[in-house]
Length: 298
Image (tube, rainbow, N blue to C red; front, side, top):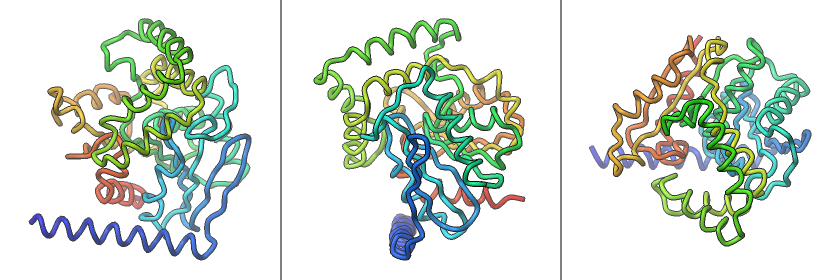
């Protein structure tokens, strides 16, 4: 069984490599600049807007996009201020990015695109779907929750106070503290040490003020009351294994997701068996199979 599983993963990696080479080698990718967003457009199929997480680069989604070809057209978003991208200053970062992505979808004439977001990108995807019901066809959320502060048992009011303190501490950190925090926060994000180093590098290269503001908004926002407006089919892919050393289990983590997403009317929740937070790397074949099947449903 181990040999068969390893062989399947080897074939999957080979297929991704071939697809990546084909689509980059034949000029089917373009990079579009739109209101401080950088969007890589790959493929000719069904449009899928792919949003990475806090401090992450657009390349979070590169392998996933390649593996989903030729069925989709990926619109892989690089958010400003993250992973070395030039920063912008907005009073409310997430809502500003929501509005820009809505305008991008309209400007490109994308018809009923799929929304796909990881972590902060998942929250942003929820905001897009709530803001414009009927504009999008499906929603895929990868390891993200509608109320991050709820993980600490905080009330929405308490979470706002905690978020303000968090923003102050992050924005005032010294360069040495910022780098140390980047390395520390990357731990447990992936099973692959090389990927952990990559995540840490992205965080170090991110704009400190943008990161502090976005993290505070993530912590304070409670999207649970808005979930009934998610009238489109929604797939949530959850991770738990990184918390196993601290007593987390598959069942206990699943309950957290179920409780937080209880208000979503068309929810499908699936938990990865072994992947850490970056499921697109740690459980790549599983994630692609889940997404491909979900998008293909009538």
